[in-house]
Amino acid sequence: MSTERDLEGWTIAFDLDGTLVDSAPDLIGTLNRMLAQYDLPPVPMSSARHLVGHGAMALLRHGFMEAGAAWDEAHAPGLFERFIEDYLAHIADESVVFDGVVPTLERLAARGAILCVATNKRTDLSVALIEALDLTKHFAFIAGPDAVSARKPSGAHIHEAVQKAGGDPARCVMVGDSTTDTKAAKDAGVACIVVGFGYNDVPRDELGGDVVIDHYDGFEAGLADVMGG
Image (cartoon, rainbow, N blue to C red; front, side, top):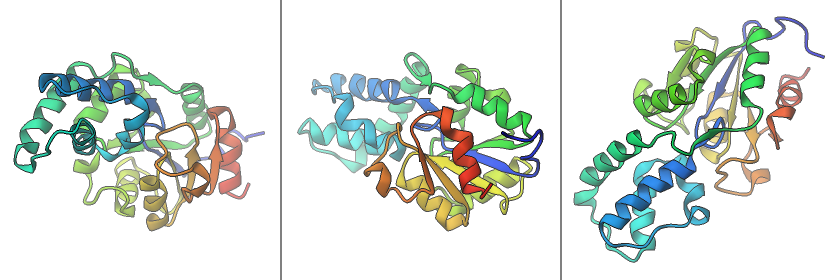
């Protein structure tokens, strides 16, 4: 059983898409609206879900290539901007917070932990999504790749997110769902908890995390394991 304020001095850094929030429906919804503008077939959720954590450009490229259309890098910036505009307008139509996230965040805060977000989703988009889902109050800082010197899988992303949240990078645990997160944690020299229900890009037991959980009900037990307590 946890001791009151026993996480004082620790920071828990969370990935966003696939870790805190199931955002794939809205991201792939935007992709499919763009494909429809070119009379291209929609991409099924099952074929694109694992790409969500790799950014909008990866989704766009995948969608156009799967539809058999030529991908022109010269047009990529324009497509990207239109993607972002549409996505912002639909950022939380179907996106939902994963079951158990909110009570877990509340308990971690009650135990004294600093909470932050370290995501490869652009900061303005991350803030918009987090605000739309009423999660803002839980986090001391939200760090997209534009808020730090290097994006995940660089460990600098985690270190700087933690520092900006007022924490100590030497006393941090990363939480994520993909190799981007586990590699960043390894580079940062911190433990990593993997959520097995996210947008895993390889089999979850091959992601390289220290602990894999199937539901946030098991988060604090996993946290105790990686902290050696």
